[in-house]
Length: 627
Image 1 (cartoon, one colour):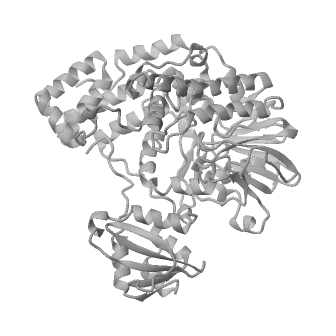
Image 2 (cartoon, one colour):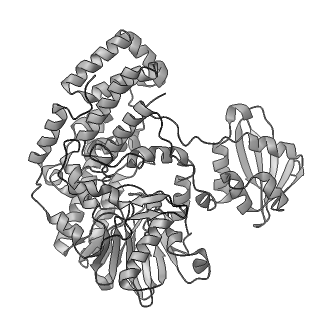
Image 3 (cartoon, one colour):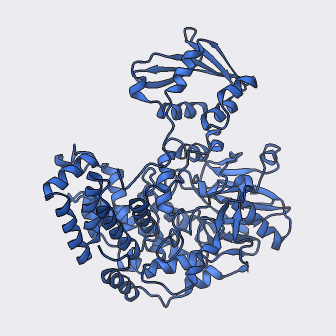
């Protein structure tokens, strides 16, 4: 069995990177440190129970020279992303960076401060606001803006603003049209699976260090505190819309279906400052998140950046985003935006060109390269997204998973296929022998693919698990892409130690913001169809605090909802909507709600129990690289 150390092939691959890229260029480091007022304090954030939800100190090792177990280009990106603290972007605009995966931006107004993107967790958001106030005074929060519908840009809202302040109209909350629907649905419908895979993408449970997690390309990792949401009180519905908050004038550009389904850029004309949201970052972004999400539209992404250049290019002097560091100077900003635009446009157009010549996703991904003018730009490198993965995403968007080859139309599932592959190759020992040979030659991709079959055919084969794990480690230690590194290392850990528990089901606070129809859709997803197939149950649901009623019926294993009450229903449930949220999230048991008078049942209550008993709990810790 090979030793757990970077092989000569891995070391050579990393040495080659040093010769390919301009490591003497230190402009990004100057930008990342520009305007520093104070480093994070505290650098470790805990929740009310004393559990650490953020630890910037855990990345102190990045101050050292790049080790042999990290791609030098990724090491450089992580060094930049780890620079933390309160920064002045331009007079009146400040950022707290390195306090979470994303940045919190603060814009000073006539009486208070406008907060843009309040991080993931309430705890980190509160700490970031406290750092700002320690150096800029106790200014009240006078407004809140979400740039888009991903949780790292809204989850910490309750750490900076209370529900009461918003309800009283003291703090307007602005977001792009469709924000709330996308923010909650993405975290509910497939939320458990996404959260599970996000653990692999961001590597939040991996040990920090040269052999482990060194960041995620877009930032360091995700905080693990309390996630909530404050619904918008004001929507941005069109490009060119102007708003004023606390004396601050803002000009908006809607950019739907780019990095998020609901997203927007905006300019502060008086300060010549452009917030580019997450549409142009210091890396190639994902067109399909490895954690899972709808495929993003590279064509529109490129076009909206063209529009941003036309709308704001003549005015802008500083540009900042929801991640990483700003950029100053009109010429430098326009050069950045042009190349980011061309980056997504090139990937889209050239992938489609090759699709229409008959090439498959894997073939295009293996051969398509960026033009030299883009490939040599640090901000176009694949630290978070990658050319290989994005090409496959574009293929999926247009043609789906099926490549047209009928041999691939009805393949065996993983375990059944694995047994057949192992048998065809000549049995477990033959597979191991081929795996050892390929490992010695440095063909780690083949080792991982081959040994994965043996692991799925013989889950208890420890030698197979270890050889695959070591191949994944070598792939991790050489890749420039941080999510790939984290996936490889998480896979190696699962093979050796079993499943790392830490996945979550959607936050009850997000479930509470689903519409009634969305909530019933979420319930339908949890219905055990085979067990429900022969059931015939009809229950009226009356939300007593909303004066709204629905009928839920099981039909052929499907949970159907329709407005209004059915006089022939088996039972009628009268319940507060907030009580239902608590019941479905597991926070409050049903007997307690009955005793409190927050729910009551008329008719055949057994039928209601049968219906609820057919709803399954999702598994937030399912295996990924093992059967």
